[in-house]
Length: 125
Image 1 (tube, rainbow, N blue to C red):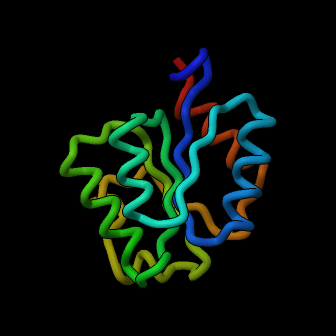
Image 2 (image 1 turned 180 degrees about the vertical axis):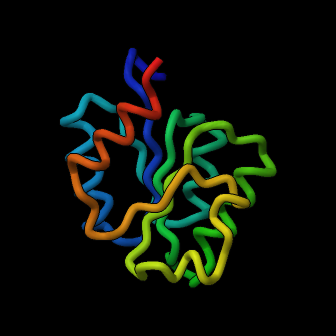
Image 3 (image 1 turned 30 degrees about the vertical axis):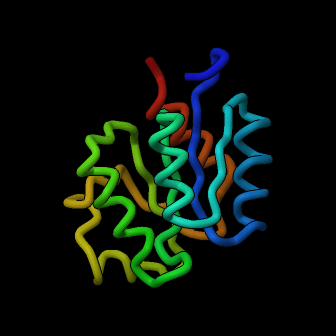
């Protein structure tokens, strides 16, 4: 938490998606950090540990999101991680997302109400 707000780290190489997520999440009362690359997201994760992460499956490289999730797990991340995917069930075919430590997968386009409900449930005390 930062200034009494849960910190949400959103990592996606699409500026429109990051703008959408920031708009929805800030309106919902969350502090939002954004990164356009897995590397930048990792730096933010280390400098400001988030309460929740939303990570794009395919960024600058096809498996950048999956690699980042694995690295976060090795660093001891305990915050819920949701993967953003625009490829339907492709993630289920290429990786066992539960073994990656993911809390779930969100399909693009992201449903605002579903996202806020997930955050509320996962971050409730």
